[in-house]
Image (cartoon, rainbow, N blue to C red; front, side):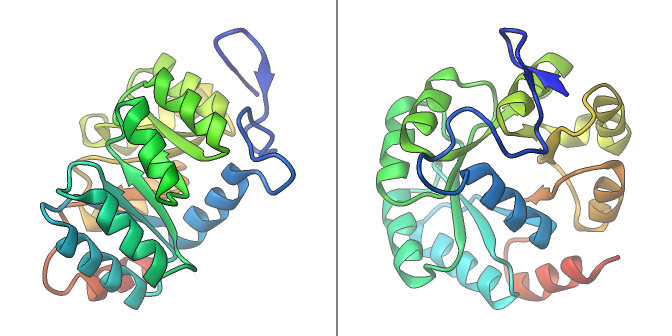
Length: 222
């Protein structure tokens, strides 16, 4: 068990977390399944909307069911809207969500989940109102514990501590669902999964020509 900031004991493996959708499946349970199957979460930090759409096409071609666009992409709402219409079967999130206004726009455009690079209470509030999963970023044990108590935590920047740091976190947060992201190379994915990661966020190392092949190879890695 882990605890929220009010000392309430929560079981992250149960999928029963604050802010889940009412009258339907908990959005965190659905996202957890998608991430577990994918093992890799492509973080598609590109400059232009057209580049983002192309990157999603390559991820879909590799058989990946989940992707993360970013709010740093010019005209990201257009990219999200286009991808949502073109690949309705994909689980599509928006990363670098750092304000309530971005969160509201992303939810309105059909984002399945939101991701922040650091603790963002205002984004969490919007995600809860919208019944949308939120991967809140954190690095310190306290930040990661708080995020994991509410659903799924993003460990960022993950390369600073490496897989050993994730193991240490999970030794005091057993059952926590954590997605390490930031500075991770493709050939390190297996080490992070072995350390207990739910999935591994990779950005720069994937992008460019041959992305679909790199993703397929990563998913096939034991």
